[in-house]
Image (cartoon, helix red, strand yellow):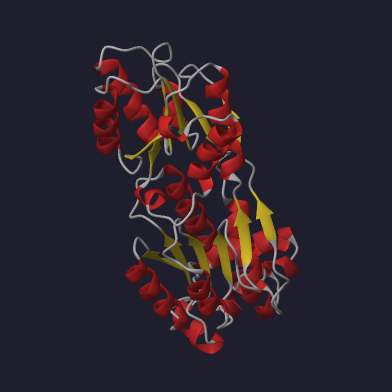
Length: 335
């Protein structure tokens, strides 16, 4: 016979309400030692809450939704997903994922979120597919939303800002200060089709503008979305009589492929071609030479994920909050 909350309460010497608080994600009301006692009693008895029944009583799904711009393979997105899954597990939630890589996918995702697929959403989508109007239509339903976004957000939505442009501009200015004058930018596809530069591309153009670099000397090509595309793009650039003397790649994966392409062309990094990436992934530390990069000093995303669960646990919707995650330029051997 399945153990009950009452049996757990008796074994732990607490009330049934306390057991409900612990397993209902409201354990802020419970002393840590009491919470531990409840969990130990539940473990001994093999108790697990009936999620389906609890969801029906509350009118909730016990799910949160992660909305991302790719199917995986991006280290920073993978870390965000992992931290969300871990906190969701601890709070008794499951995670569903929606991928937005086009305008049509953005419209479909907004429809699904408005339809109540989840109790809250963490949105991490680059580019212009998820417009402010679409985001506002989701938030207007009362769904708790945390958006990682540089653009505008509707009232009632928590926002996480990542000031990529400033740190990227610093990296490009470092290249200019070294005397590099033919600096290529290896872009993500979505960066090539935006109405105006933003984020990483904005940092690149801002630095060149600040130093009066002739627009005719700018090289902006695709290739940052995957390793093979990066290698092929850089190989083509290096065949030009007026080849670049530096490459600023919009992802570390693309920057590591750039190092391979430069070396395979019989050139040296950084003497002939300096290379800088974006993301500060661990793999950059074992590149040869170690990769100079722009990114966060730490990859822990629990502060971002906690914003969402704070909203889910609140009795009343809290005021909108803004979290800024600092990025830095990390100079290593490749530049």
